[in-house]
Length: 360
Ligand code: IPM
Ligand code: MG
Picture 1 (cartoon, helix red, strand yellow):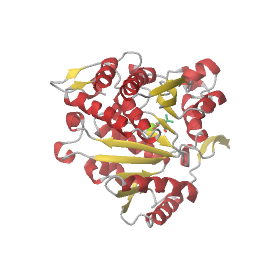
Picture 2 (cartoon, protein in one colour):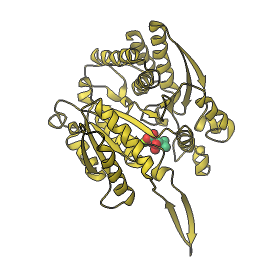
Picture 3 (cartoon, protein in one colour):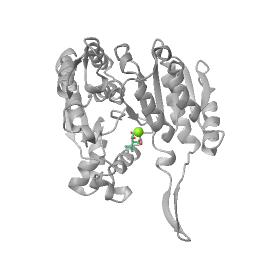
Picture 4 (cartoon, protein in one colour):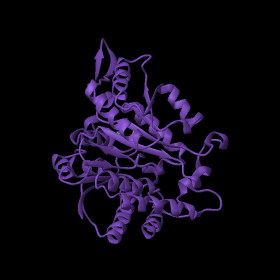
């Protein structure tokens, strides 16, 4: 089969890690007789430099006409990059938020699992790690604080900023259903994370999640307050299967979850709408401090490409092949700098991509 993939390399380490993911996809294409037709799309700082804005209508159209989008990362150093002298709606991140909204990518899946081989890179103590953990963070991606009305005003000489956090029941219901559907294919447990002791949006979240849970009698549902969840993630990560949560909580908790897997460079993600279409990107950022040095870890992007094969193209066997190749390379002791430990073989971005592609 032929698949059309829109590719957003983006900024910072983006182009380097996307290059390696394409290398691995090409190895899959060769072995299994598929072809991937790539279209490069500009977003973030790369688009600002050319068009003055982080995402053009043409870029959105190019993504819509593809079967899926593969993305690296966007953004630069927020204190030194000239992109951050622009008004907020013209900065790199605004492009990503606009793309998520335009493509209706409301369901963000961020799997966080600890590879046995990377236990040494996990900052938790052995007794906390136990036999490891494997969780899926389901983050609502097109609502809440990141899309609410915001403004900064001056009242009687005092500057004042507003951000609003709104959810309607339909937005909560559709992400909750996705969360329960995924839990049915896993360990059948959903931890819904909110701040219902303070926020109205969280109280509605809790009610709607409970309504949805009635259709999934086999799934165990528990509620957890977000501050407690932040603590539980480092106290007993194995208790989690699916973490279902709103946009900002999911943003924060997924960074925390990624760190306990050894490195943010290991965490893949899929952002899905109601159809088979999706955007696939590593959960980590553009890491401008190490950009262009060929030392970034491409594994999260490569695993994101595997998610693309699985969720958008229904190529399960091919996705398995990529995931197994990653596992094998780790077992053989190859590591990029971020996950390096004693006795392992240190490789750069390009070599890691070659090793995985060879093993597909
Ligand atoms: C992420 C990132 C983005 C987000 C930024 C770049 C807007 O942190 O994908 O987690 O907050 O969603
Ligand atoms: Mg984030």
